Each structure stands twice: as C-alpha cells, then as structure tokens.
Image (cartoon, rainbow, N blue to C red; front, top):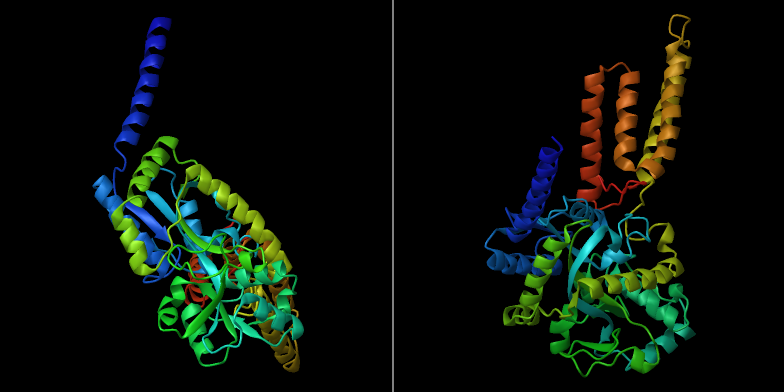
Length: 444
C-alpha cells in the first residue's frame, strides 16, 4: 500500500511541475488586457495601444487596451493591481502611482506590482512666453523671491505631476512652495492657452507637450528638470546646471499584479525588451514626441522605490499629504458630510412639523426613535467611511437604514447596491472626485 502511495505522490508532483511548465510555455492562453488608467486618446492611451499591438504580434494572441479611468488614476491602477496574477492582465502604470497614496487617494504603491519595464520618461520644464523678460531660470526665481505670491503658474490640476514638479523646484531653490500661485487646469493644453493669452506667467509641463509652440517660437523654455540635457532638445538647459539641483520626470511603465509567476514575468520581460529595442518603437515615440527611457524589472523597481521616497518629501511640504484641494475636488469626505447635513436638516424639519401638529402620540413611539436611530447611523457612517472606505460603508448604511424604515431585506440590499453604484459613477467617473478608499484600498 505504501508503495502505491509513494508512486501516486511522485506522479502528482511531476504532473504539477509539467503543468506549471506547460502553462508558462503556452502563455498567453487567451486574450490579455492592458489596463490604461487614463482616457482614450491621451498620451498614456496611445503608448498602451502601441504596446498592445506589438505584444499581439509577438505572441499571436489578442492584447486589448481597457481604459479604466477615474479617481485621479486610482481606479485603473487598482484594476490592474487586483487582477488575477496569471499574466493575462498588464497594467500601464504612471507617475501618479508614486504620489496618490501620499495624498490619500489610494493605498497602492509599486509594491503591489511585479514591475516589467519602464518605457518612457519626460522631464518637467518651465515654459514662458517668447516675449517674456525672463531669459533664465535664475531670473525667474529671483522675481519670485522678490515678490512672493504674485506670479501665477499652471500645467495641470492641483497635486498633479507638474504641480508637484513645480513645488519640488521651488523647494530645491529655497523658496516657499506657496510663493507662486498655482492655478489648476485639467491639463497642459488649456494651461498653454492661458499662458499665450497673458493670464499666466509660466507653465510647468513636459517638453513634448509644448513642442509645436516651441517650434513656432511662441514660447521659451527656461529649464528642464532632468539630470542631463535632452537628446532631442540639446539646446535646452537643465535646472541642475543653472544651480537648482532638482529632477522631476513623468514616467510610464508596464507591470503585472503581485505574485504573478516568475516564469510568466520573464517571458513577458524578454518580449518587452525585444520590442523596446525595435525601430518601430523608436519611430512611434519620436512621432508622438515621447522620450524613451528603458528600465527593466529590477532597475525599474529600484527606480520606483527612489521615486516613492523623493515625492514623499514634496507632497508633505506642499501640504497635500492630508488630501488635495483647489482643483474643484471637495475631497473624499465631502459626500458623507453632505449626507449628514442634508438628513439632519430633513429630520429637524420633520420633527418641527410634527411638533406643530401636536407631536407624536403614545401610539407612535417610533416617531422620535426613528430620526434618532438614523442620525446615530449617520454618525457611525461618517466614522466608518474613513476606515472601511466608501463602498463598504455606504452599502451597509443604506441597507440598514432602508431596513429600519420598513423595507424588506431584499429591497434594502437592492437599494444599497443601486445607490452605492450610482453615487460612485457620479463622483468618480463623471466628476472625477476621489472617494475614501479605507484600509482595503477599494476605489469603488
């Protein structure tokens, strides 16, 4: 009997080993999704679609781009990080991964991924109009120092990549971060229009985003925030060579969910290396004005660790570590407090109306108890939402409240699902307002 047990165990072990090897060799076994955390048509989307097409040619299986937007990038990053770790979901991760957990938008970090490859990096730059009086970064910084709070800059939303690049530059120059007024805009394009119209003094964004204006001599670039001068723009001086030791780059990269088998990681990493070295990739990036910076698995992970440490200091110095404001985003706790104020006001009106009518009778003891119960639930909801996050807290609060108010259990559950989904769609998808993620990091 023991002999049969031994052979059965050995056979099972060999089969498991062969199955794992076969799975790795046969990768991918079906369609692979590349999750892009930003909108269709944008730079990250275009880069994602190039990689989807190139990987599809390499593997002979469909690679499709899935745009999961909202929550300042948190929704898409969470979708790729939380996917099944079998190599059939790849995340296009971006600069925001290094900052959004510092700003309490999400709890995700680079440690939630198996890093494949950094595929792009574009340094931030300080741009002014061509007729501006400033000829160098030093001249601009001197003016900021002499008249703090007067000059206006933009380039993105408050707390975005270019806002933080600007904040770090001022900090490195020994200037208060609020010595320049940051005017939030949804991106570099509207910011450049405001600059050309004379409504802004300077813009902070990447060089590719201003390439056409630079070619037409409409703007002047005072400094790029890179370690060395850019290969495609060798005449542009760095901030470092002008005496301000500061580097800030917006980057993009490919990553897999944590605990993806190393065999699968290696297969994908090898194919990505081949694609990154191709003429097709170089031509695509040059055509779109994107800088090429390649870091493979280990080097990419080390780079992200350094980025995480670098931006922690800047986020805290800018005061964004308690959440972002100033970009029409009321913050993650606006929703629960709006509910509290609204329902307390409605409850007070109902109480006052009943009192004018003679108040509750002895046969209606619940008339007073019910508003108190709902208010108590609201207070618990406000406390719980910071800990458990929006989704769990809202579902629990709505289902319990509707049940208390007389709905059947199944009706309460349906109402909770509908209301939770509706509010999430309204805030995160349409208004792009962050909601509390809680200890579970759920962005929905």
